[in-house]
Length: 324
Image (cartoon, rainbow, N blue to C red):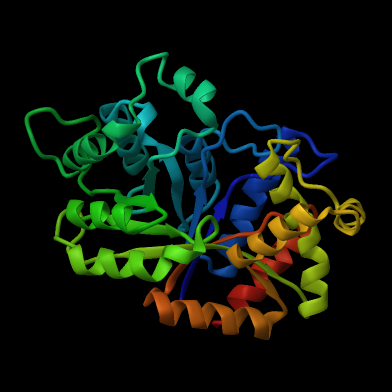
């Protein structure tokens, strides 16, 4: 099993953005020490509670402070940007950290139409241009055509498309690039998505298909401890969905809120649990093994959005210790 971390850089309530960024660097260094293979960064805008808005910058910052762990983006919002500019940024990172760049791109707006328009410099909606932009990006990184972004590196960074269903999987397969399925967003489409990716893959940037799955994991000392820790993540995610303050509450605040949820909120929390793996080591390993068998995927990106940084570190440590 290969493990990486996808960090949305959730800001704990009571901590500053600067403290969250500094902790993230420490977490990436600790992940490398534990033996994690990669550390990816999300791109989110228009939120008080997620600090990762520029994955390319965080990739450079972490790569400069680590030695061998791969760094990635999960993912750059390709429809809002020039494919050429994105290719140049990825190539620049590859020149600085050869063989350590895993660039993931996606179709998301990153925060609704208000943000999309500003990211795209008020140009018309380009969401439908995603397949064409992805194709252009693949060509630039594969050094095809007369126009090539600088720097012209000897090696090629790894490119992945993020997705939530069969259409995105087929697109990644046809482009000959990697695929990342967001189980942490829409768990129902995983099996069909991985099958579509494998069946439709044609060699391109990659010679063979390479897929990852991404899931929320809270691994406690035992099941009860994990459930207690996960209260912070449950309330955080509920607030994100409602467009409320998305800073991560501490366990005490979260438990109080959990006790006062109305019926609709309780249903949301229960539904969101399907996007997560929560439990002690045995429970977590059983679930990861089951999903790995269903998806035929042994490459995972883990999210863990807890308030307590030390408990977050321990959760990541417990997971990777299961597979040593």
